[in-house]
Length: 244
Image (cartoon, rainbow, N blue to C red; front, side, top):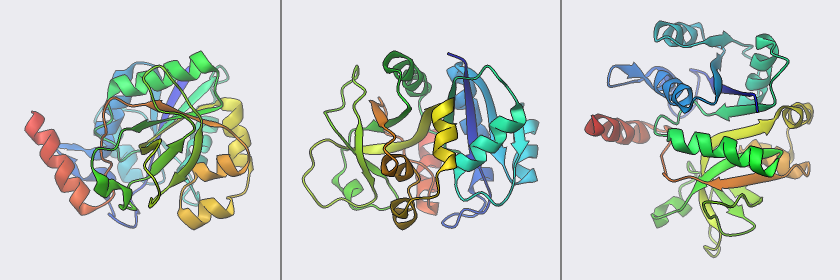
């Protein structure tokens, strides 16, 4: 199926301002993410941003970027504006890859697309097993509760997404910053107002669940941390520089 990957990004993140352009191994975080998306080889890749500095950085590093409005409430709204500007009429799947996930595995991006096609799902995302119990209490790391155990060949429904977890530990996983939408489902999603749960918990995926749109979850082989805080950045920088 014809797929577009759009990476929403902006400089004004509250917890770590300017993070997309922070450098690791001489390359910005957002350009690292772009390269992962491009290496997945599942479709064209664009960064969607309100900041000219990000556009310039991506283009300097051989990528494609689109300047969008600065009034969007969510990354998904930014993704949809970019799709309209690109103007492709043959797209069936849209992947929204968060711009702060430089450790995302290419194989996991590819697997999400495969599962979307196989199960004909409306929205799909990725999650990984939780090995460190501290993750349950860390509100910067989003968790997902699934209907069934996550296995490699399964694509179960998400029952809930949450930031903090105090209950039993059955079928709860570390949610990763990536979504894949059927284009028609994405159009429907952005037509809804932000739901009360979405606003309360600052999780836009709750807008889908609150409007009875199913979200399926595939198991990721890796459990990458995203860059939300300065501590995350230092940790990821160490991992990526050590690998080289």
